[in-house]
Length: 135
Image 1 (cartoon, rainbow, N blue to C red):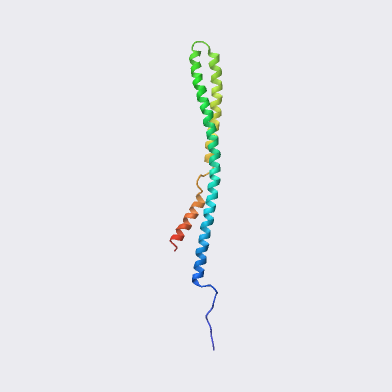
Image 2: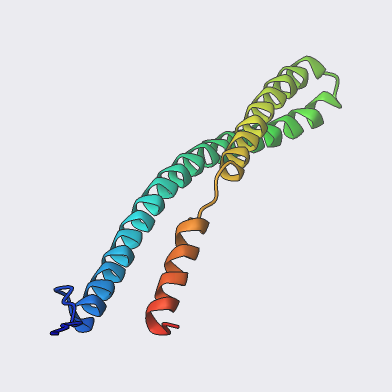
């Protein structure tokens, strides 16, 4: 009675290990691509927020200049010409209010997203750790 218990699955252990390593390398490559895409998206959001903050800074600078002129006219007001000072004060208050609003909107834009992609970075770190120290 001939019993041939040798079963051939077609793949050796070396080929299986090679396939696992290839799959792990492909996964890491895909995660790097995902991280790169997330960083591009976050950079765009950062650029948009910085644009609003730069605009706010410009408006606040103009407001500071007008405030200085207002103070000059305040001194002139002390020598009873207060109508001119009043006009400058109203304009300055309006410019500073707009600048403050733009600054607030820029800060809120920054708070609405995370500059660093947490989930992708963590998954990539785990995969790199697995590749360097397989258990």
